[in-house]
Image (cartoon, rainbow, N blue to C red; front, side, top):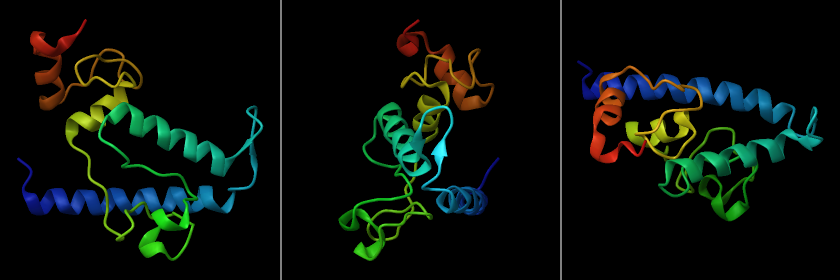
Length: 135
């Protein structure tokens, strides 16, 4: 069973991995993404909007460039390390993550990366809960 300290450690590792990927994307930010003919910066904004729409919990994801008023302490428009204006990390519940991973906006209805549903305890509880299943 995961303890609060182990969960914090895992979140820290995830944040570092995300920052590495976002740094690599940032370096290519003005390059066009084939075959879409849009820049990497625009593409990351579109992905972030979709994730925010699917998780149904407000803005918890942002592209690589943000307006100054939304940036880290209102000091820069670059957004490699995803955080709120106070430089605090966003958090997501397991159900919010499942809504994104399933691509349905519903943690009870699998599709997307897991068309047959995920197999973890929380995912199984959601999928087996007929009241909310929506299938």
